[in-house]
Length: 417
Image (cartoon, rainbow, N blue to C red):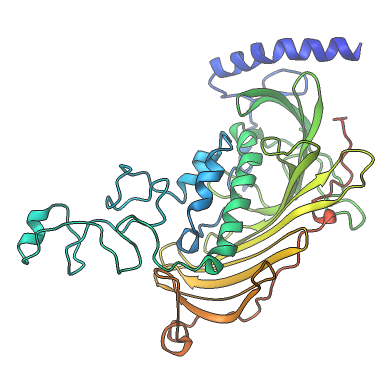
């Protein structure tokens, strides 16, 4: 009977998906298969919830763009949207002032004195007939960063990687609305991960997310905080655990609120392993927010015991409005005995970064509280440049590596109840 049920699900998935798309995905399905209309808004309650699709904090200012090319090859359906937060679409020409694939920087066309220009005639007025992208200002004529410090970019690159994996996990689930209803304890919906349809089964019952003992104290429904959710996905052949989360605020399209989650990345997994991600986050105040992300691969091929390899931890925070915010990134990664750790702080509207880095990957490298000019990657005087901006690394230290317990599913059965 189980085989017949799976076969029937596989046959109906595309029909159900087409039906929902025809309706414009305006409704959500309950566990009975009927469309559940959101209840009338209750005072101080939203009418619907939406699983956040984005927990990212923009670290583009201190990130190297070489990683973007690699990530783009993964083909995640929500990766383009994640990348758009960091890469501005342009003409593909070095000097157009927009960052394109293959470019590490693009400061636009300039006359010899650094004044922006769009044609040679503008430069001719000052006795310079060439309007072009110029070297010597931190961004070369080939749109590559001059003397860029890879060590400076390390933690920001890890944050960008973690952001992209979280987007791949959360994006498909963010496409449907969840009614706020004190009687709603579970529901089903067809979602697409890539081009493949799945039946997603959501259960809002209380459970143990962190494994420290006891449940999370969730309401068991969607109308009172905190809200717990566990999500299974079924492709008609295999049912898999996808996401376990606790929302401490009502997640909305405009603000993910705060909470914790653990999930399985179905779009990026070497054979014999399960790629898992986790995050603790608080974005309730958009000018005082953080995301602490964990990433690793759990070996599941018998008879090997569960192990974590290539564990990554990436932390990012923002204090203040986007244009002038104080940003922090911190990251750690290890691979077969080699490791690297780095952290730093900078102001979004300034060109200086203060941080530390350590690695035993030959040759070993280490620096502590180094002040760096972001545009060129050169070390500069702390007293002259970072200190006047109020930059400091008080309270920062190297992050411990992600462990198996950081990624483990607790109180999360293999199949939906």
